[in-house]
Length: 331
Image (cartoon, rainbow, N blue to C red):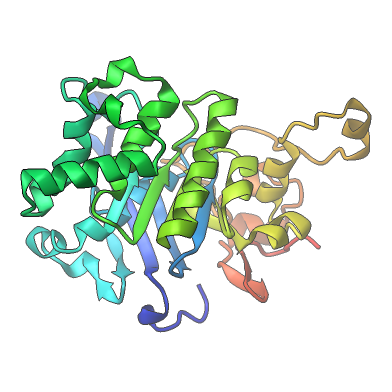
């Protein structure tokens, strides 16, 4: 991204991040290829901000979150957190930073240990990272439960006794236990009913205002990301296609892929469907091991020209704060 500023101006500064996974193919799996899950992306997040990352399945958005929190090691690039380059840190050094970066996972059913009671699930970070007494841990756990809207009487129950929404509240309480600065929400509402999704989103917003949290919010759908985010980054096949403030992105969409995602949002009023008809995404995702030359989106883009098929565009700032990876931005 053009004009990267001093790292201390941001809580998180991701620079030229690349993540690759080896894939065995060919006869008897003898041919080794590399899947570029994240391909040279850069973005920054200020403290107290919510950055939404959206895109189709397999675009690399969850890999970005897992790499930031060092569950996956990058192939190249740098990640600065609160001014410190965490990509250069050993696991021992990173253990001091880890409490400040937590994650809320997608599936509230598999992310909680079914053999542990709620109290023990939320208390585990205190046992691992602190030297608090049993009485102090109990006080903190009950405080976290109250914060996310769980009654103290639930502390001795097991995860299977709760609904999906309640389980996600337990996961959020666990993530908040060590008072982190950054929380990565990896599709935290996609496995929940629509009515429960709204409750969890509202809870996340309330917690952000109360605790001054910074979020990376990963999701499939633009409406969910629009509701909770300050800025949105649109990903496609490991690349950032467009980054902008929420209102700017929806009002002045510049990338054809973003245009297609917006067109896929259902319109509840039948009379408006024909009036507001927009070009939908055409074709299928290309093979990620055999990507087209030039722009990665050119095989599905109705506006593609010869240069798009030959030369890969760079993410550039077209208007203030609005970045787009396209040779011919819309509007």
